[in-house]
Picture 1 (cartoon, rainbow, N blue to C red):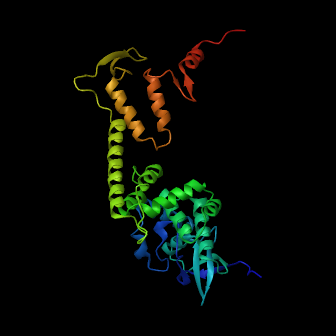
Picture 2: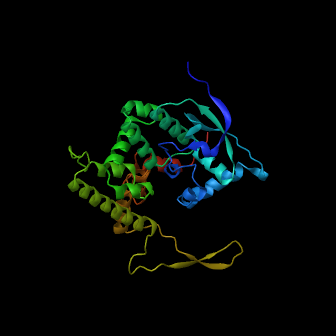
Picture 3: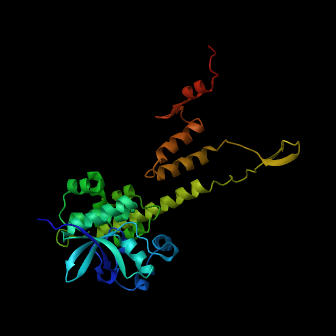
Length: 320
């Protein structure tokens, strides 16, 4: 007969960290000194943690709205399942105990899933953390469909994430973890296809690693070029901006920049190339179609409008 859950105040120093935490910044031990793990957190995460700590101790009085989850590990100790941020916030506040829901021991997979679901429900994990999670569950023997069902992901998503995490070289994964703007999952999955596994070492061959690193550098260069074009449109050489005079509501004359929506063929091509370089970003394909439409290169935008529809919309409504 399964043991019932119980809720109690648990001594923080008796709680051991989980063997896997879906939030990478909270993987380290929670029973160690605050200074040992607080220095490793990004500034934004640290600020968020301090805010949580303040909310848990308004006016100096402890106020814990939700219990953390731990398992009874035996010998008077507990294993953390979820609630790393709340536990660390309690440490920041100097608490000796924390309210916890204590459950009987479970399997590695069940603990990983409990931790993951808690974090996915509360705050989205980064794509790198999700990939790391999928890879960990696959290593534990979970099938693709089972993993997808438990996490609420599609089967292709689990497969792509696990492949990227397993195959990509360490430097690329570090950039992915740091949320490099060029590290879209679609681009990384394409790069990972270059990785060939050595059957003896079960690792990617040196040649395929070199190919992936080269492809990654090309991706970074392409992203940089796209950013330069889209974020900084320069006035073409030899072309001066013209000012024109305009009267305001009081009749005063002021200088204003001349509005000119015409673009050169070369600049239009640069912008379209940049948008296509960002094709893995949501909306980039539609943005390219709209850009083509605005300069008259195409007469409609698929799924959005057409010049005929636009003209019809501008016609005054007929009076009945």
